[in-house]
Length: 485
Ligand code: NAD
Image (cartoon, rainbow, N blue to C red; front, side, top):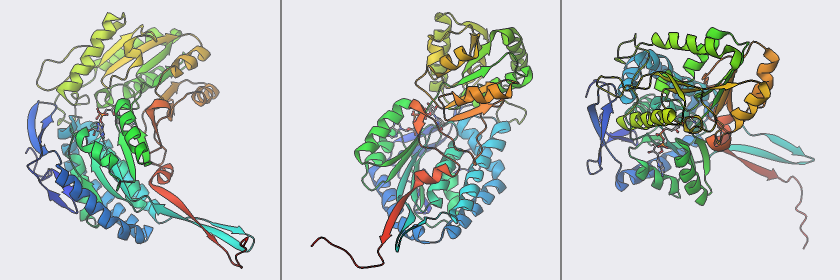
């Protein structure tokens, strides 16, 4: 146990930490050293059952209290997360390997933002009154019931909160299954929510692989499934949820385009491309990994990019000066390395990086390929690591067409000094979360999510409320009932 405030058991159910050592051991590895720092046990059928029955037992009373009361608890949890940001950031760094220079600013803090935002909205969730002559209809915005959240490993605290906050604000209970690669952070979210006053059973965390996720998705007592993960997993989970006609939110993978025009501010464009490819060592779903650079600016762009990559401080993630950490796991590192080999084999030009760094842990150099063409594997498949593919283009029309030639539709970005072109290009991007002269911002006030194979539904913003609640309409007749016989 590297840190005194780390979770004390594998699961958090019905307001308390729970252990069941009969479950298969899942080692927790610190990616910066490869050392095992903890063990959690995969949820057994008994643990899964305990979580479901606890959540079901608690949900109706939670939905019955006022939104303002629910929101107060969420906002209190947000404050507690901010007060404990340092400890939570250390845990996030142990879980993921991301440097403290990131985790201190974007993980627990964005989780707190979600709890604060949806806590604030909870009191204003209403239906409407529809007058129909003398009769009328009113609508009630009601909870869905029991929601299951399934997380990816890149933002374990944030994902736990982005799913939990709107679910709880709307009066649902949640069972959250973190990724087996990063099981620790969500437990702290559960602990804090209950310390803030959340009644027992409303936010439960259970551990495991897809073998635990799958029975949660198909259980008839579960009303909604929200997954953050890859497209292949999304297909399976979406299909399984469809069997039970369940509500779904799918936050899946991407291969997003970032289009840089000749007239872009060079420093901003290079900065945007760095944010779009190397933040969190490239392990961000919305990354703009196909960087289309107009031919007139290409040489200057690549030169400045190399200069700035040389300034990356790679190393111990606990050192706040470090700004580039390891990959999350040996497995993810080898997946990314195999893409680098493919890129070279298919004729892309390696501009910089490409090698594993000689030290403990799963460090890989920030890698840039130029002269990439649309048909190359590194331009088509999600790599989910620090590998940028630079593609050349001549005209705006060409860039738009090529940018959209993908199964994915999570994000898209454009850098240009021409304001009308910026809006014109973004309007034609087949993607859900877009950027003009910026990249990868995800404020809680804005909807986040993908189109095409990148997903369905939206997280964050008022849009998320639609995905965690349902409308009931009630027709009220004021006069006599006129029946045919
Ligand atoms: P993954 O698809 O391998 O796993 C995601 C989660 O699904 C894990 O918790 C896993 O245990 C679970 N799972 C696997 N099979 C399951 C099944 N049959 N039933 C139920 N649950 C199952 O993804 P990953 O490797 O953990 O994360 C990386 C992927 O996530 C990338 O593709 C990335 O783009 C995507 N991602 C998307 C977003 C987004 O918001 N759109 C955010 C972060 C990551």
